[in-house]
Length: 485
Ligand SMILES: CC(=O)N[C@H]1[C@@H](OP(=O)(O)OP(=O)(O)OC[C@H]2O[C@@H](n3ccc(=O)[nH]c3=O)[C@H](O)[C@@H]2O)O[C@H](CO)[C@@H](O)[C@@H]1O[C@H](C)C(=O)N[C@@H](C)C(=O)N[C@H](CCC(=O)O)C(=O)O
Ligand SMILES: Nc1ncnc2c1ncn2[C@@H]1O[C@H](COP(=O)(O)OP(=O)(O)OP(=O)(O)O)[C@@H](O)[C@H]1O
Ligand SMILES: N[C@H](CCC[C@H](N)C(=O)O)C(=O)O
Ligand SMILES: [Mg+2]
Image 1: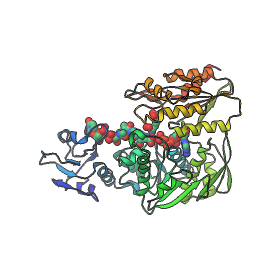
Image 2: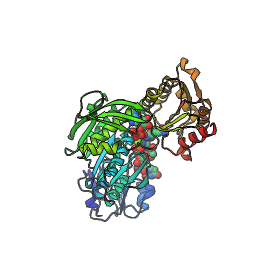
Image 3: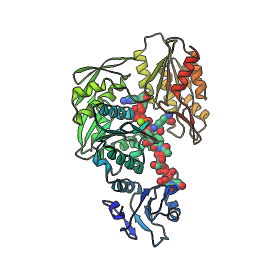
Image 4: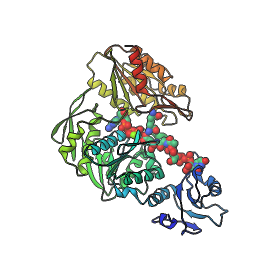
């Protein structure tokens, strides 16, 4: 493609060199340069892409997009100075791939918890309704029935536009994608055209990255601020920041709620291990998903489908047969009648929601044993709070390791222990080895007891010092429960 076409709509501060030249690829990583590529120098959290400009030119890059043009320039190279390289990357990538997001209906889902669940159920629902659909999610990406592995909740702009282009080529009419707060702040979604935006909720997470809760709210709100007037913005009215999201959006404002009047409304009639019975938009419907928090997810899905013009009855009929995303309230029952639940709860609010659902549906005498850890290189302030919530809502708690990443897992567990009150100490054990922790919980469990294994859900690995070792919570829990039967 010609560079001048890729530059369409970009605010350029300074330009050195020609723009009527062919470019072959766009990249922000000096290790992935091919001949005549455009290199974007990005100031990141660990490194500054400007350091690699000379290397990329040696490797064949012919265009450099940057915030500061180097003092020594090369005659055959084009240098484009912009105010923010990440913003330019998103917009230029959309141009390079011929704006695939505008050729299908792209719906973004944001919020602390529930994004994967909502996006995945929307994907399954629209497949069930007969459409060709794409999915971009934490667990995996999909182009209809083809699975593409996911590395991030929201991919980088190049991967994102490539994927959207493949979806358009695959005939997709819709794409449901998770929009993480990191992606908004890092401009990964810049240049995309959304047909709708959905907000689930906002609670404590990622304060390592956003620093304050206010910044975290602003990040989520920025997504809605950027929606076009042709889009809809659907928010959860029961969340205290639900309306904040819609304050400055140009999109059509729509709401859903369980506790107050809203455009889309539902009531939980019954919540059991067999699923949810809801009164949704004046219809009585049974769903396979467990947990009252899933009533919000189902309502968000229902509202989105109706806003996209689907027939209410057809939507509810299809929805009632669907299961949720992998590793979310995923449970097995052993021959001894011990229930083992694998769940992706990795924030204080999610842990409380999943445990309060277990309290709601337990029969009374069983013990609830929770196994929980916290990820390394992530928000440290949530560690003691997650341990405290787990203790407050369980009969026994085993603190263990999640993905320690570059941190010492023992230290992470010690930081969690700080949230355990003296009265809760007697019901808490710390076993850093996650497999041993699962084994111990299975030995402690008596018939009828419920084991909650929180934090890793669908993940098939444990990340330790940059290496992902095979580790599958559900596989190990099933194996250990079978051993004691
Ligand atoms: C903190 C964070 O989000 N980091 C992401 C970010 O990296 P960064 O901008 O900090 O990059 P950096 O390492 O400082 O490097 C700066 C620049 O120099 C370039 N570079 C660097 C080295 C080199 O040799 N050559 C080179 O060109 C890099 O490509 C980059 O452009 O941009 C990278 C490229 O898109 C991401 O891969 C990386 O994700 C890291 C791996 C990550 O773990 N991110 C997590 C926190 C994340 O994004 N999570 C959210 C989900 C959160 C949730 O909702 O729960 C997600 O959307 O997945
Ligand atoms: N609507 C909700 N409200 C509160 N908690 C929820 C909700 N939906 C799911 N959860 C809890 O949060 C966990 C993660 O759910 P899900 O994967 O759908 O969220 P997510 O927003 O995609 O998370 P991530 O930020 O990791 O991408 C679930 O396992 C469950 O414990
Ligand atoms: N998207 C979340 C996932 C957390 C999952 C948990 N298992 C962990 O490793 O902390 C994050 O990157 O913070
Ligand atoms: Mg997700």
